[in-house]
Amino acid sequence: MRRLFLLLLSITCSAPPTLAQGGDDYHKVEVFGGYSHNRAGTKVGDADPDFFRDFTDGRTGFNGFNASVTRNFRKFVGFKVDLSGHYDTRSAVFGDGSTSEVESSLYNFLAGVQIKNNSKEATFKPFAHLLVGAARGRNEVDDVVCSSARGRRRC
Image (cartoon, rainbow, N blue to C red; front, side):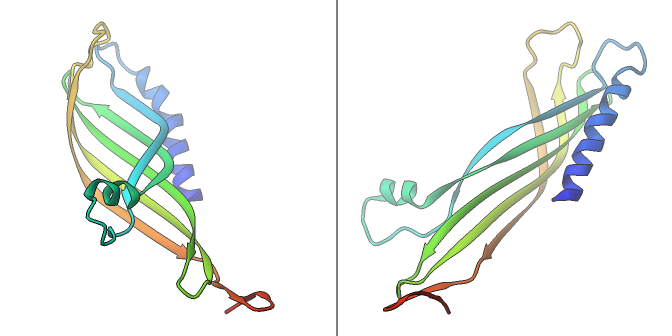
């Protein structure tokens, strides 16, 4: 996580000097960063015939970030790199009454072509991009805490 933060920081700090290069009529580099919320399916629905309830109950909200850098090579064409990370922590209760904390993370790494009018004078800038990449998900389970007649103990 520390390396990822340092990479994003170095990209962000190096972007402003590249904007000062040349006197062209379009933006050379675009940088974006912000909050992101991702809803992901985490379980299979139960035997209840209500599909909508199964669909919404089986989805969990993950909070995270989204960052991207676009290098525009021409007025209408650029290369975009996009990175997002989403995180969640849940308590899992098992059938025997034992519980555990599950920390989940999901990273998306995308890159591709963006088509947009990058003119400095344009006020309305619709765009299209084609991004391909990979995702990495991880679940980390803490120690399971079992319930007993005398209280809680580690299994």
